Image (cartoon, rainbow, N blue to C red; front, side):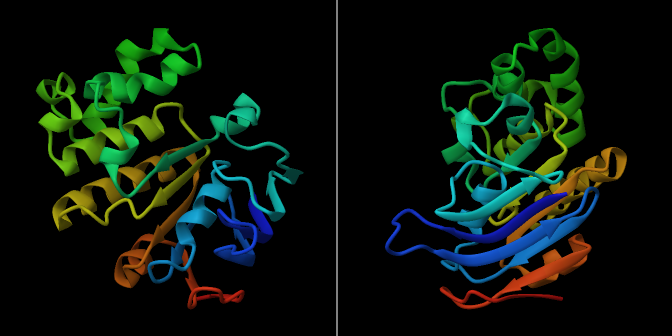
Length: 224
């Protein structure tokens, strides 16, 4: 289980954007985090994915408190999470071809031998044709690049997925295709999902339950 207990976090200790928030995600469960822009959803998602150290509160993974974040976290914790951000062009190295972008986590974790099989497999699953794998980010559309970013998030077979406004910049057909990929992965692996967004209809259709976050600064979270 992924547990966030009384999390307070932000980028200025004197003005946190998240205050006293608690949230749980069970293995195999899809939880939607719904709220308006600026309420701190993305900050909480980064805390959940071990990318941002909270000012206070506790993150527990399978009952064990997390002590370190980002590159200081143990590899088995870092690789347990796959993250897809809202803006693919800000999360992709513009120098890398899409094949190298997808393979990046395998290289970083010393698993290069898996690249020849794993990259084509994932490219096919997210809808990328072989000719696109040789292109760089500026040579593909936002939707194609987001497909590659999703493949990168899945390449290490994470136990937890965090999708932060993954479909916000995509057309309806591409958004539906990527949601289907995530759901297939979750169904076949039992991975848990935290999906962040402000599209109520999408989250209610996608997730097992949706957490509704109120106005900015509201410490209360109600589930629905």
